[in-house]
Image (tube, rainbow, N blue to C red):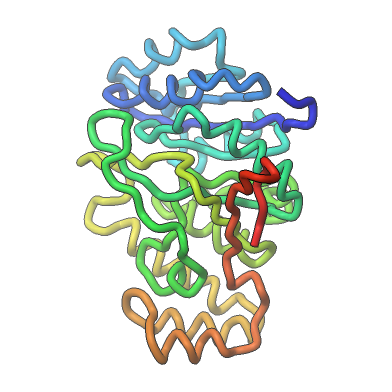
Length: 283
């Protein structure tokens, strides 16, 4: 492996997810990426999760099991223990694919202008293989218009410099949609790059975060409103229009919105693999 590959810091927050936790741990550690810094923050589980984590202690940079103030707080505690150039978190029921970390390292090496990336969204069920794969062609119009957005949290990776410029922490006051609020801050600073390969999978199960009473969607709407009224006037105009539209934008509405003179970060970038040059390219 090239000496130019970056250290990748990954945090897994967990609370009473013993049924799925080991799959997550194995999906991260099983890739044998030599420059991995893996941190596991357990919120004081009582379902056997701690015993599972202990089995992997020798391969985890840091782990702890203690009560915390919620999902965002646990992730913040984890990232405070890291130092890698590339950062990400994966929740304790989701999984990486065997090629994920090496691919991420290659993309950031080959596309130095990329500050944050996302893979092709996929879903898994009871196992660790994809049951559904979705097009990765979303943009900020869709992200702002929908209640859940179009950014797959578990497949997002970013440079530490972007994290620090965005405040260096998740908002601990947001219980479910702390990821969405972070993406809004990232989007103000740099365009999102869509890598045209799966990097992670969201596990579809009854206890997944944010599905209870639509709490995630409610927090998304609240975060979006806060962002709209804090944005500079020119950006606020677009966001107001988009936020007023139900569902995804199409036809004349999309054409009108895209015609407004706004920053280029509203258009997500695309990253594909050039088989002749043997490298990832943007454009």
